[in-house]
Image (cartoon, rainbow, N blue to C red; front, side, top):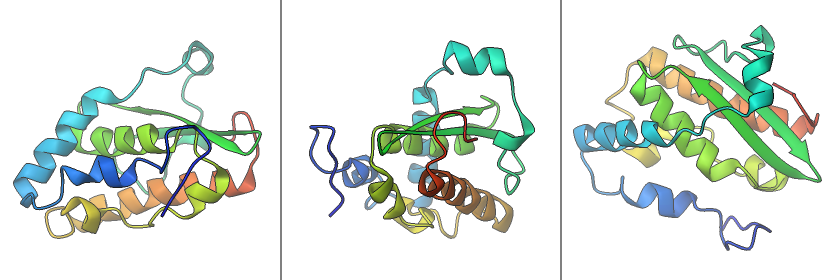
Length: 152
C-alpha cells in the first residue's frame, strides 16, 4: 500500500482509480476527459518561464510540459497540456492530483503503465500508450534525481 506524510493517509491512487473499476472503455475515456477539467493552472513563475523544451515529454505526440520539483523529499508537479487534447490532459491531471506532495519513494512505487488500471489498454493506440508511459517515466525519473526546483 502506498502511504504518504501529507496527513491524508494512503496515496489517493486507489481512490482516484475507483471510478474506472468496472467501467467499459468508452466510460473510462469519458471519465478521463472529465478529469481534464481538473488540471490546475500553472504557477505565475511557470507562466513567466514559458514552455522550455527541456520540460516537454518527447514521447508524447501531444505537447505535454512537466515541471517536477522536489523539496524536502516531497514531489511537486506542474503541467501544461492543451485543452484540445482532453484525454492526455485528463491523464496528466490525474497524475498531478495524485503525485503533488507525495514522497520521492512513493512516486517510485507508481506503476509504469496506468492504462490497465484505467481500463484503457485496448482503447488507445500504440502512440498514445507510449506517450502515457513516457509521462509517468519522466515524472519518476525526475523525482528520483531529486533535482529540486525546475527539474523539468
